[in-house]
Image 1 (cartoon, rainbow, N blue to C red):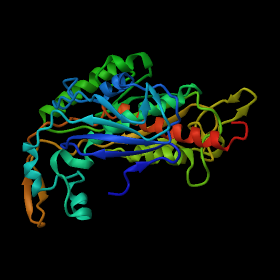
Image 2: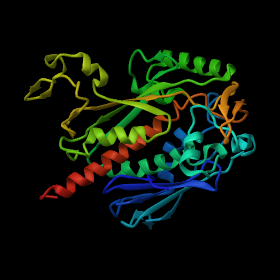
Image 3: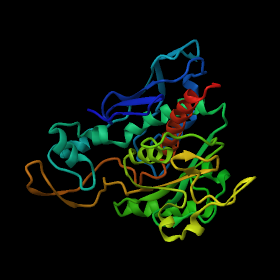
Image 4: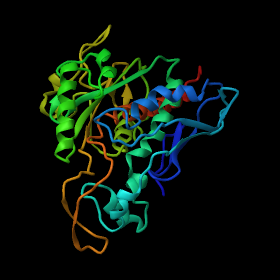
Length: 353
C-alpha cells in the first residue's frame, strides 16, 4: 500500500493494523549519537493510549515501545530506527458484522472500493490505532528539536460545542480532555458522557502552538512549512480541516487588518501564525485542526452491504466517544516530525553548518 511514508530528510514509515500483532514505525534520517531508550517513550505514549479515563474506549493497551533497530548502547547510530508497539487487548468478534457491511462515515467503504480486500477488524489500517506509531516517532523528532529549544504544545480548544474561554497551559495535563480551561474541561467531560449515553459521538478543535522556532524553516514552493503542517494534520484520521494563524478569518479582513506590522523588536501581531511565504518568521506558530465525530457509534444507521444492497447497522464494541482528546498528542507528534524534517533540511543548506 503506497502512501505510508512521510517526510524528506527525517522520514517515517508506519506499519501494522488495529487488530494485528501490533503497529510500528521505521524512522530514516535520524542523526547519530542521540540518546534514546524505551523509557523516553513512556510519557507521550501514556497520553495517547486508550483505557485511561471514563471518556476513553475500554480497550486497554499498555503501548510499550520496543526498539528493534537503529540504537546501540543507548545512542542512535544513523541507521533506520524501528519501533514496535504490540497489540495486547484486541477483541475482533464485534467487528465480524463489518465483513459485509460498511460503517457510515468510516473508511470501510472507500478501502473496499480501492483495494477490494482489506482488514476490516477494528478499522485495520484506517484505525486510529495506527497513530500510536506516529506518537512514538514524534518522541524521536523532539530529540532533534531539543538543542534549538523548539517546543510544541497542543490542547483541546473545543469539544462538543464547548470552547475554552482562556488558555492556561498548567491545566492541560490536569484533566482528561487536555483542555487549558478547567471549567470548560468539566463541561466537555459531561458532554462526552452524555454522548455515550446517547450512543453517539462528538467532534472538536485542537490547537497546536510552537514556540522557539527560528526564522527560515520551510522549502518553497511545494514544501512550504504551512503546506507540510497542513498535510501532516490532515493525514491523521478524523481531521477534516486545518487553519494556520488567522485561518479562514483572514478572508474577512482587509489587508491593513491582516498584515502583521514589523518593528525592530519583531512582529506586533501574529495573524500569519508564524509563517510567511511558506517559511517560518520566528514568531509563534499557531495551528488549529477540526476533528469530526467518531463514525463508529451504537445507534442504528442506514448503510449497504458489499453487494450494494440496503442494510441496517447497529455496532456493538469498544469505541471512543470522540477522537479528541487522544488525538492531541498525535497532532503534537506530527508537528514535531514536520519541524524536525525542516530543521534538518535547513541545516543542510547552510554553509556554516
